[in-house]
Length: 462
Ligand code: G2I
Image 1 (spheres, rainbow, N blue to C red):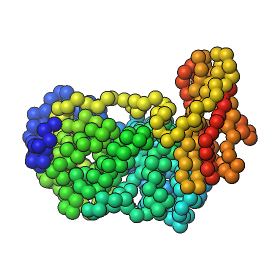
Image 2: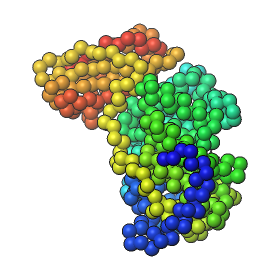
Image 3: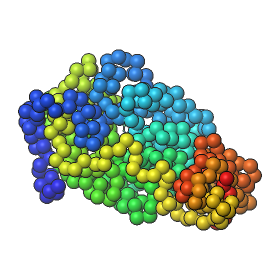
Image 4: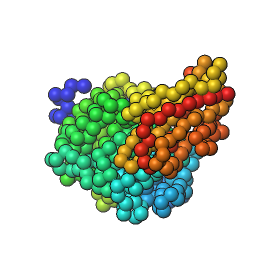
């Protein structure tokens, strides 16, 4: 990419894309839907979906024809999934996931930790209680959807607007500056196969806010905090216009070693101007090899959270707008750079990288002979609470069951566990994770209050 020219070029990109594609549109090869065209470029094209609209035939007809990625607009948020503390409610979100499964669409999960749309019980919490509640929430929701989510917005909108470049004040922020990395580590432990994203708005160009996010991502990558992607919401309107350095901004994040995604695109306006801006966004994403996909924040204008801005690709009756055509044409015309690796799931192993947690205590090999295993622990400690991730690695032969001996220090209380059954100080496999191939590993988690300290796990396998 020619960075120096990006600023000027992008304003013209939309019009250029429209012009270029007049010819291509009639070509036999041009894809005729957004999802198919994006897929041709190794990307996805998604939309936000509201569960209660799925019974609207016009709505679902467009959804299933055009889109191959779905973000629940509200159904996976904290207030929806844990309306009462400890009581999880997945009905509407499950409905969307079932729809996606039935129609070959993938899911973006949105959003595990956010200052907004918290249930009232969480809004009234602070300190350790809130931190523990957040960890428990993330663990439960990400575990419920384990294996079903392409990418999670783990943390949403944690940075302040304006020139300060700092964190947004919130009850979560006041639990300690490390709340974001704790959220990411917790999500990784619960669903190791999901890409983990930080998502925000007003970060679409280079500014104090995006610089602050950039510094955080850089720091996370340097310290091994598990982050895989950054979402750029891209709610574009006259007060928040499409920045001239949109593509350059995506590229600088991609250069940090994360995927970038356009996560909530809508553009106020109409006609050619709106169509041109949509094409510019598409062109920018296609020009950044790690820009893996685009999601628009709703289907018809009437579905939008800002319906008065007519910001989407279909009119209130479900007819394609000029912006739809410019978007499809830009997708079909794109592909000037090498596409990102095509995969339907993250390319990592199904287990988190060893670097996700700050401390690792090796264990004694257990069992002996060919059926041995080792257990190692990674402790994520904050004031008053912890998450221990225990990794069970099979030795030279596969094992069909395992038991980890692990004694937590006095003064600790276990508040939740996952992927494990406990009997005193013995932690054993559950039905689905007993079998571990030679040299491979599985992980389980323990969340508690108090201080975990240095742990010395043992392992026996059979
Ligand atoms: O605000 C636009 C988006 C900004 N980024 C994060 C997104 O999660 C956010 O989405 C919007 C939804 O599109 C709205 O539908 O988030 C809003 C809440 O912050 C959603 O609005 C809420 C209304 O405020 C509630 O009164 C309503 O009960 O939608 C709820 C469910 O319809």
